[in-house]
Amino acid sequence: MRKLELHWQILIGMILGILFGFIMTYPSWGAKLVSDWIQPFGDIFVKFLKLIAIPLIIASLVKGISDLKDISKFRNIGLRTIGIYIGTTIVAISIGLILVNLLKPGDGIADSTITKLSETFASDAGVTSKLEMANRQKESGPLQFLVDMVPDNAFRAFADNGLMLQVIVFTIIFAISMLLIGEERAKPIKNFFDSLNFVVLKMVDLIMLTAPYAVFALLAGVMVSSSDPELLLALLKYSGVVILGLLMMIAFYTLVVSVYTKKNPLWFLKEISPAQLLAFSTSSSAATLPVTMERVEEHIGVDKEVSSFVLPVGATINMDGTSLYQGVAAVFIMQVLWPEGLGLSNQLAIILTALLASIGSAAVPGAGMVMLVIVLEAIGFPADLYPIALALIFAVDRPLDMCRTVINITGDAMVSMVVAKSVGKLGQPRVEDWDDYYQPVKGRKDK
Ligand code: ASP
Image 1: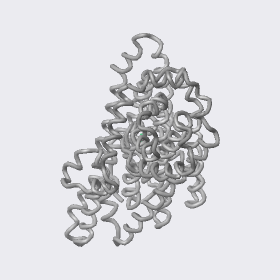
Image 2: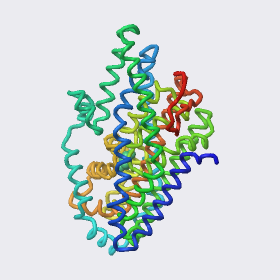
Image 3: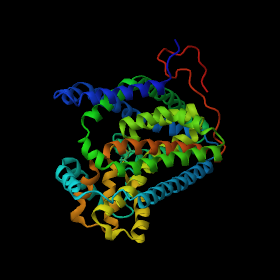
């Protein structure tokens, strides 16, 4: 029998996980059974993915840059990437703002619902911890993010997944220096990293073999910890607006893929789908990064010179789904709690602050909600209402986080194709002969 393709296996794992989690919400012992005996396997999988993120970034960025024939090409890639990232994020926020203003999900939310949501969540640890994190974030100056990008200790940066940009800065300088000292002297290091790169990619592959089981565990865990269905229903219109906006982003990406790169957009979605399914299951662009890189390089044909820079940078600074969500959530909250703040100037301010906030959001579950507080602050939203504001949207944050993370990584993949095409580095996919396979490779020739 032909083996089912990986994305189908993952999808089946997800559906079974959702069904199983749903059934387990009925018996009184169900939630505990899932969180004690099933969820840990999902957590182990996410840890494995995170474990290889930093080695993969280092190995592939060194390989990507040191294969360049001239450095000015790298500057070209860098500037284009940042420019396009800003462009797609502005498109995302604008779509969100147009939809939320047209469909007005905040109108008609009953006072009793607001009271119930605030009673349930305003002092919930989830909300208060997000407010605390936002407070810490607020204290820094406008250029702090630049200062934070530069490591003062390379090994400390390698030791913290939250410091991915620092790792990228170090590795870029390291790889450029390799180019500058000449081929002969750089050779031993280059060989080492080339080989490391293969090993780490194989590790991604091995970990992915367990993905169908892991997503089962992750989604069963999400199901048993989700909120009261009545509250979810009250927020259906708001969630619908966010999801509609996210779907429009997919349409926008497929349009760009077909018009600019001349590739079939359905093929693009199919090839990137295992990464999308993982983004949905883990709610973390950072955890998904190794898989996004593998799919984009091997299955879509983006050259490593481009993907090794565009994707890790994108995972940290390009979050189209998150910024769209921040736009919709900020206006929804105003529609419910502070209608007098809904003027045009505030909406324009949201575009700018949501852009900066999505750049500043960490690529981990729930980060978008922390930065939402910064957006609210920037438009002068009354500070005493913050806990109620967050309580209002907290019940549906996890499912929306899952969806927006899918868009975040799809946007990164799309931009990597566009940048690659613009510098002549979008080639044919080259799937490794070890793909989705765990037998040793015999007699294989390297690239
Ligand atoms: N979970 C998102 C990500 O990792 C960030 C967010 O929107 O909360 O991309």
